[in-house]
Length: 226
Image (tube, rainbow, N blue to C red; front, side, top):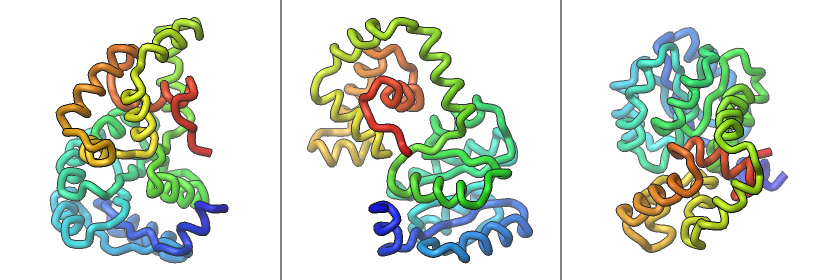
């Protein structure tokens, strides 16, 4: 309820990126009929999306993923608009592709055959800083973590090795903050943030941010999105 009231007070400004004009038009019509959402631009390719994103400074970029190589543009797009979050829309169901999207900077992945209400919910959650993943992707990563460490007491001992600062950084990751934002929030340098991440990854036996987020959800370090 609080989230809905927050969204009603401020419209979420969205940039659409899709190579197919008909698809963009359909998604635009869908979004603009939803209270609290506003399309500030649409573009057919990833190169032009950077220029428009810099000009419009959208809150969220809804970008269509047609093939794995489309993800290569995400890092540059994020670097051009550090405050903007990216939600990927795709028909690709491979959890590995979804994981790669998040590793490259997307905050969520939604399947194209998702009902409109779920898409709107994903947009809201990602805008508020939460990570949105399909159940299959979440299950895939969770299963990997479970295979790596089958006993809960082992994980408890790992978590106990985290310093208070490292726990704070994990919590901020759960809010969707990037390195620069974490550094600003904690009044430390980005180099120090990276050092903390290296330590956290080593202590928890995770390889990247995506696995850290799922791990933190599973073991209660951060509260999972509802």
